[in-house]
Length: 467
Image (cartoon, rainbow, N blue to C red; front, side, top):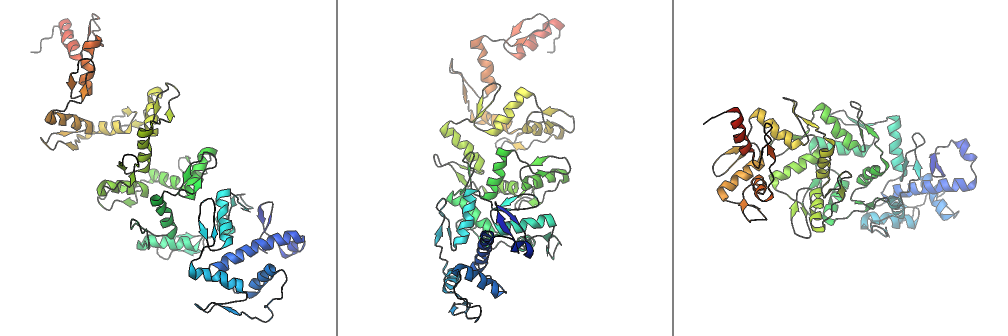
């Protein structure tokens, strides 16, 4: 015997233990096995032991006379010549050819050819997990998923790649892996022609076009296009981080995050840009980078039409229309629309400077500041003015320099209307109106509105006459 359900737990029984079960328990087991049988026959799987088929067909007929004694199969599929004992079996089988899907899920409108598939699918919405592993207690919504999971305990990996020797627990995973060697991408999106190595990836990808997000978190209501994304998200509520790095001990909520993190130790960058030889540690970052070459901006704001490379950028942009600033500093009350701006702001209060120069050990609060600082060591000036050829180490320095060509003065004094090309110039000018003198001589205490005036004054104390 395979397994039987009691109180949502699946355990295995020997023939002797089975004999001790009462009729109601046996019937429950038969229902589970019947569902497995219909799952197999529905996808065209032919059981070699015809007694199994006849046993379950007799269970459905509740004791009607069986054809198992005669071997008669009077119902034939004229397309492929396959024969069936019962007319109902033939009708169900025909759906393989017709593509008919009679059973529809009400919450998400997804349709299925077989009722058992609908019943299994519904567990996604109800979060019902009937099948539990007796070794680790992990629960699953499908029996075949439990069977695959059991192999992780036995470490059984019977399917081996004949090119690289890597072994897998499941044949379909081996097939998917083999496509990485040949680069085969047989499944294509009919809207944008993007190709994938697996059919399920196409189905998930299509939700980008439809906006469909069938998987909803029952704690905060956030919806996801992919079930695995929902599972990872749920851990933000539970705090669960089941994947640990065996080098530094850091914990992660998903295996993909752990795999990506491990490359920080190995320095591995397996994903190379098809346009410029630049390499990346993860496929997602490579895909985003390639948009700098293609100019692709697939995410469009439905209010102003502005497009973005990243969905997160679109989400943050939308807050400019709504005025939403969901991230609030609990120390000063300042609010932010963007989570990264909020994280950077916090460092003002904590004094944290996590980015350190490996040449002079100077530390910075922001990675961009470190990158700019490092150019003082390398002398790199990658930003060039296309009008006069002058080069700069920072993009904002180039942007300000360009105003000398355009005559642009975007910063205007709200008191007298005088305009300036730089924010700093406006700030200094405003001291005429406010009377602020922030620069004080540490010898006589005299204060000045401009630093250059303080420097000139200090020479009167030391007698310096440089000109």
